[in-house]
Length: 374
Image (cartoon, rainbow, N blue to C red; front, side, top):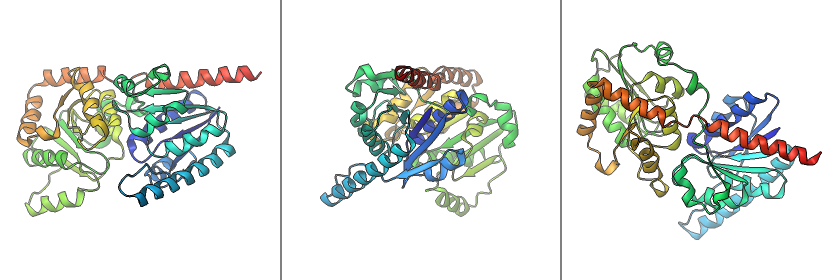
């Protein structure tokens, strides 16, 4: 089978695509896979590390700010469609799976001119404009959250799957993760992060916890600041003459998210679809602070899906009071039974079968199409 996966711009689109690619390779090592990404996306750095060949095309979503920018966007998308069509004709895929991001638009529009199966995966509870526009061109849409279906127009195409998570998140134990990271096995471990760039509100909470837990026995803290905020936070720590102790780890970017999530007891983060999926697969209690600056407030609905089951505390950014969050953290640390109950509810919210559902549908269609040709 020849498969193209495409998705880009952020890890939330890239890592699901890689998880899908890994699943196909696991089921049949002879599967030929090509990744198509955006020339401006971080996939140009991330994908090569996975070992999959990568092609980059021009992609940009419509910008309504000025007529000049609209024209410029149109020209780039048109260029990207031409580039994509050339790649598709050379590779001759049996199927294309898009996981979101601007790059899916030119790739899937170009795919109308070749004969192959086409699929989308929508990670969020509220889909973006690109995927809603592309719905009519694909065979099926895999839904990360069932609620997303109400925003699309062709319910017959919808398949509830959940969000695909890489295999390493299912195979790591808490003990192993702590051994590999050098974290004491009996510590209460808090992990804060706000995405690859970071989030000011999450970092504000983290800095307060840092002062509280710095050097405190029996507690460890991992703080993922995001690349935008790292230097600023380190300067602030220095200006306040805080001598950061060994139980506190401050990183600008978290590479091995599987290790860090499995090692912790409590997550404090935004509520991007991938982050929520990875947190629940690892069975971690969470305090989720959805970003208000996203389409359709979709992070709120991502977080609510877990909070409604008891696996997370949901705090909207407008309601966030740092001192109250600190008290929530202390309450969970001092109430192991409550923490255990949240962890169990979190795990029960996890999308265990997402990759199986996606693989089985795509592969069964491939076999059916191949049999028709005989």
